[in-house]
Length: 178
Image (tube, rainbow, N blue to C red; front, side, top):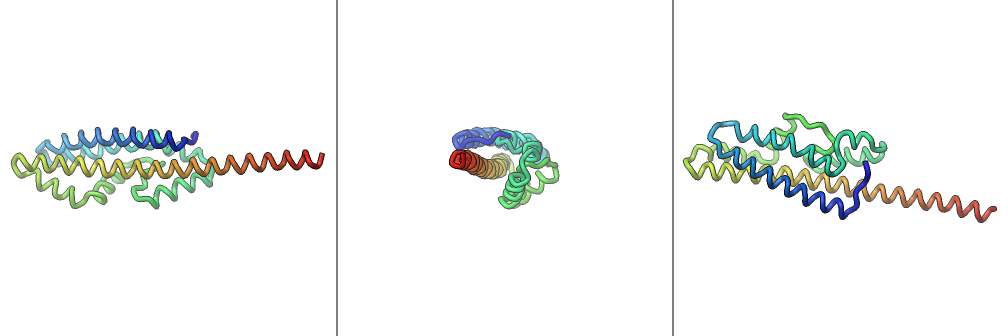
């Protein structure tokens, strides 16, 4: 995994936000369908596809994290679990995605199901709630990926600077002694 510059990270974050907004529109469209469970299934399917894409764009897939040094791997794992969602560098499961949806949008999701049965306006309310919840989950994951990738980039730069200084000092010491 190559580390990204802060400019590359900013660009990636913006691209991922656009991706999430487009996928949240799909979630809203699925919420209009008056069949119970279709919207939740759509939300889970959308997140199961988009979260790995976001992880990959930030260089934080499970394989990327496994390839890191133990110290950097710890930075990713501890950072990912302490920030909230805990989907960075992990293999996703349907249960994990459902738990996150419930945890972040439990009240809104309950309202969405009840709103579906109110003629006309209920579908609009349900679609709006789906859009907001999916975008919230997606954007929170993007921010976690961004922060972890930023920390990795800074730590990598710090290590390279120390290595350069250490290498330069050894050469300088040899020159002085020689």
